[in-house]
Length: 208
Image (tube, rainbow, N blue to C red; front, top):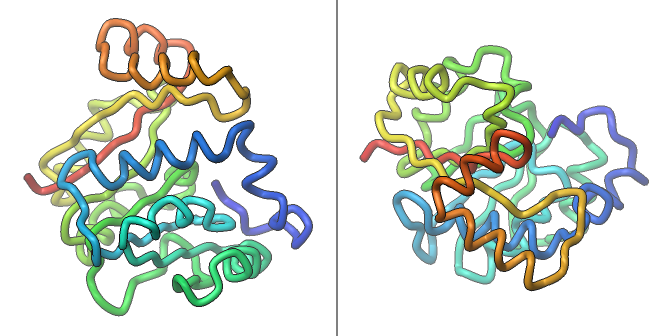
């Protein structure tokens, strides 16, 4: 999500207020970042564009992954640096402009893809420094999957893996229901029906 105009107080509370159950939400997101599509291994680097306060890093770093967070908001960058200290690199930059010093295994962009000024150009630029996969979320009620798939192919990402992401963002649900929703992600008819009304896809673009 674009956080460029957020102040320090908002940034400090970002993950707590953006997610009703941040631990469950971000842990599941991180699991799919690691395992969906080409799997990531210890030592691989994840570049997280529009990272906010870098809450996702807390669920990637324990698996031996390196983390680079990028955000356009100075307040968010400050909050992310306070959170992670010297465990990760946090940079102040726009997602349309940042380029890492060396290639990364995976690039992620969550709740912010719609801020790219030119989506195809963004996909193509990320392909230039991402070795394994680009991971992002997509609202199928807002974007046509066929259009996005075609844009990815044009930008050098021939493969697209979709996974319904059914962990609620703004509602905390009981643990048994939470487990049932995650299990339902693999039940295509049910998951696709739910996506007509709510929730998003987690998308993994890769070259294989």
